[in-house]
Image (cartoon, rainbow, N blue to C red; front, top):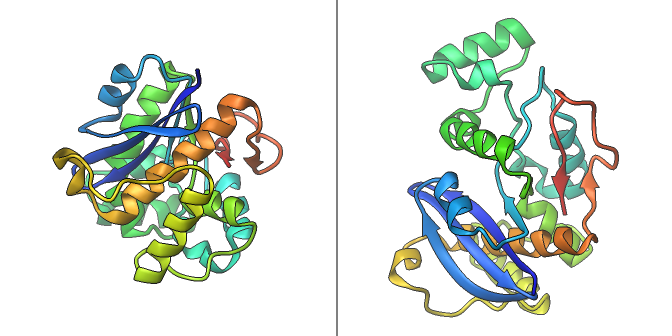
Length: 223
């Protein structure tokens, strides 16, 4: 039996899609990544849509490779800042530090995820089951082509749900109350992460970039 988890961050924590032998077994919600990992002791892989491996300096090779792989939807890949930038007390402080030390700006989205990035980094250092994924990379891999619509649109929602169903991951029309309030695109992204987690557990997953960079230069995005 192969039990794996795909997880996506949302405003109140994490949504996790658990699959057993390629079929959805449950969809759950957690406050922190540590809680999720502790609850899923039998899972062999936990694929998370959050950077794992912070760069010494930007750009991170995994982010650059993911943008190239996605193509037209490349704007969905936010650049991963170094740890010192994420640990700055405010967005303005982080922006000034990034520009002064690394010569690049910083998106508000990247800084807003700082607590989730840092908490996941702490868990990943102690739990090798955690791997990094990016949903648009996974959907691109499932489809074999760049997706036509944004995941925020009705057509994009339908396109992604259809791809997941074709891969054996049919999401129920009604979810438990704890996860039924999670935005649709986050549930779809968690399911996509579970697809990659299953490929990783089976030894079939690939990475972006193809070769793992030297330690300290960021890790890889699996698909």
